[in-house]
Amino acid sequence: MTDVVLITGGGRGIGAATAVLLAERGYAVCLTYREQHAAAAEVAAQCLAHGVPVRTVRADVSREGDILGAFDAAAELGTLAALVNNAGIVAPQSRVEDMTGDRIHQVFTINVIGAFLCAREAVRTMSTRNGGTGGAIVNVSSRAAVLGSPGEYVDYAASKGALDTLTTGLAREVAGEGIRVNAVRPGLIETDIHASAGEPGRVGRLAGSVPWGRGGRADEVAAAIAWLLSAEASYVTGAFLDVGGGR
Image (tube, rainbow, N blue to C red; front, side, top):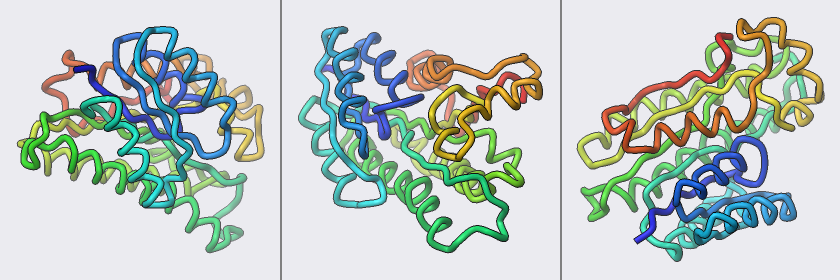
C-alpha cells in the first residue's frame, strides 16, 4: 500500500514544494490549505502528474475539527506514514510593546496549538503502541527560533521556539513506538510569508547577512524535509536541520 504524507499548509511556499517532491518520490499526498484554493489545486495537479493519489483539504489548523477532518481525508488514501507540520503564520513587523493580545493569541494558536494537535493525531495513527506501523514527523520551525527576530516578530520566533521544544519532547516520548520526530529550521527563504509580514523584499534586504550570500529556495527546504522522512534518516530523531545558508 502506498505511504501517505499529510502536509499542512501545502498550498504554497515550502509546503507546496514539499508536496511535489514527495509525490515525485512516490508518496500519496494529502495537503491542507486555508484560503488559497486555486494555488492548492495547482499543487495537487503537479502531484497528480507523478501518478500518485492526492487529496486537498480546506482546513484551518486553529480548529480542532478541521484537523480531524484532514486526518480522515489522509486515511482515505492509505496508511499514514508521515506528517509535515508546515502550516504557520506571521503577523506584520512590530515591536513587542506594540503587539496586541489578539495578534499573539492567533500566532500561537496556529503555529503551536495547531502543530500540537496535528502531532497528536499523527501519533494516534502511526504509533506501534496504538497498533500503527510507525512513521515520521517533520516540524517546520525557523531560524527565528534561535535568532529571536527583534524589532520584527518576536512572537513568531517564540512560537517556533515552542515548536522546537515539541520536537525534542515528542521525539523522546515516541522513539520506542516507531515514530521519528525532527525539525527543519529554514532561514531567509524566498516565499510570500515575507509579504504577510509587510516587507515583500525582506530576503533581498537581508541577503548580505547570509554567509552563503543569498536567500534560499523553497525546494531546498523541501529536500531537507524529504531526507528527514526517508529511510536514509532512519537513526535520526529529535534533530534540527538548519537550512539557512549559515545565518
